[in-house]
Image (cartoon, rainbow over the protein chains, first blue to last red):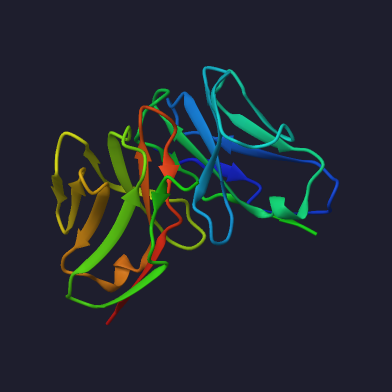
Length: 113
Length: 110
């Protein structure tokens, strides 16, 4: 079974721009969660989607948004990028919402200059 | 306020010896705990978990201990191998999205 894939793997953007990151979950998995990892911080939960509906949301500003498509693929968008948004963005998939067993992708490294 | 704390940013252990990684939590509602391992340029991979109804769970070289009264859990790796060198994250849940610690970088020296 193919693992979780994330595209692009690396991205450089300028402050004020917006960015869209993509995540394809493991086949058959319907839940996708997004996390932000910054230097010195753990993984911070952004949001979770299940069956195209946002089920949970972390404590991030409204500039961070996401969606999920009918094939369970998910995208997250960050608008009006700030320098502090530079991070590794990780996507994780699981069979159902609330499952503890999450399978992570390799992440997208976003650098904001 | 950090609900899951890994107070040791790094740990070095000799190959063959025991590695002990520690994690403290503040939320008494947490009822499920997990450890993830992360290599550079890869996403975290699930290692081992424990429910709050247990105080120990073993899987091969990996054992997780849970002390609910102290709100403390630890991951023991015996014997440690160079391939265990990675960042280890502790995570907890109260039937909520996982809350992660900041991680501990383990270096196993041959």
